[in-house]
Image 1: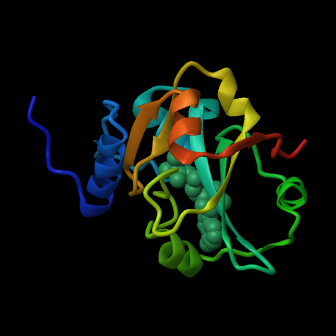
Image 2: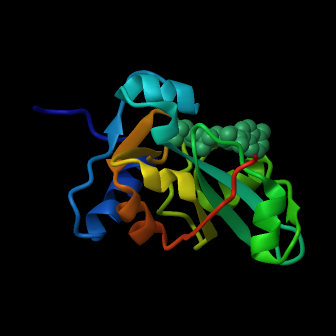
Length: 162
Ligand code: 5CA
């Protein structure tokens, strides 16, 4: 089946995935996958199987912090700050775009402009398959929790709000 060429941001993610040596396929859809609910609808999985890529800024060191969390959860910033040993500052839309190279709603777990400090929500490990954003607000790819761990080099932790 022929498919349309990917947009540049999605293509960049596909190339990073290709470099991993595994057969991941970025799917760029007609409909929005900007939110977890939209993404789950689009690919036919549960919201909990969607990987949200939430960006924070380390307040003192200005590092980019990436929290990969289940679409069913909210991130507890205090837990992340405690793991980091540093307070978190706000990451606005400009910060996200400038430091990651992705727009909000399309932030992928990989392929960032600079390597972020990455945490993985332990709840994501309970699923056989999960879906993550692939560079644009209508692009996703399917992977396993082990893949997410290997690709992102993130630290698995309890980062969800109770
Ligand atoms: N494509 C979907 C599913 S993979 C997606 O990217 N979801 S997401 O949750 O990872 O990305 C949206 C997140 O961006 C929101 O949960 C929110 O934390 C964050 N966000 C939304 N608006 C803003 C904003 N104005 N400034 C900073 N962060 C924002």
